[in-house]
Amino acid sequence: MIYVLLFVLGISLGSFASVVIHRLHMQERGIFWGRSKCPHCENALRPMDLIPVISFLLNKFKCHFCKKPILARYPLIEISMGVFFLLTAKLVGLGNIPLLVFYLIVTFAFVLLTFYDILFQEIPDSVSIPTALLSIAAILSFGIHSINQTVIGLAVPIFFFGALFFFSKGSWLGGGDIRIGAIMGALLGWPDILTGLFLGYLFGALFSLIGIAIKKLTRKSHIPFAPFLLLGTYITIFWSQAILNWYLGIS
Image 1 (cartoon, one colour):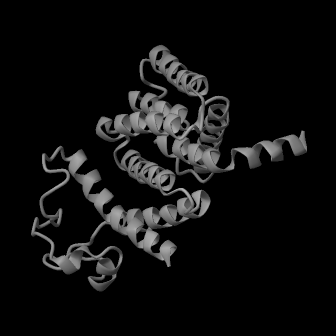
Image 2: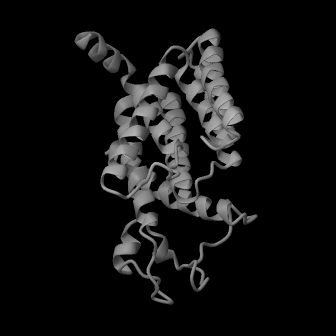
């Protein structure tokens, strides 16, 4: 039952994340308050229009007022958040509630940042910086990594991405990727940061190769990098030992 409730919580917060993404991008002041509106006709949504996933089905993916299509990203964000909340709860377990709450917050930030980067190819400071700071504080408080592991874990991606940004003058990656690197380093520490970076680049390379092969991308196409880094980080957080055992088994 608790996992069902966590899934419902996830899709509900996914709906909230959609609002935050829209308001951050539009630079609206009331990010955390104010009634949601249709982006087309700007009518305030009714309470029944705010039910995650279900409202989209009832309204047949159209605005109740102007009948214009509702972007598919809204239910996709909600469902993604629900699925990852459920997965995170399963992986962390229910034995340590403060730890679970922390990783659910991280999951929320990961999904929000992933979709924001996919949609706008930007990383909002107002989400990435607090996530990095919270991760540093929580990881050290829970004793997941030592101070040395955390410091080295932070230094590696920050200096690596910083060097790439400096020498390419921002053409290889953006400044937001440096902040994503800080989140990765805080959560993974040393030496797991190496696994997270490897997986992030691997996923990004595979996506690019497939895109080029099916002629949806070219060698000059710009793709959002944060989703791959965050996916690599998420996998490393929970499966780093399994990855290491697999690697040692084939080497």
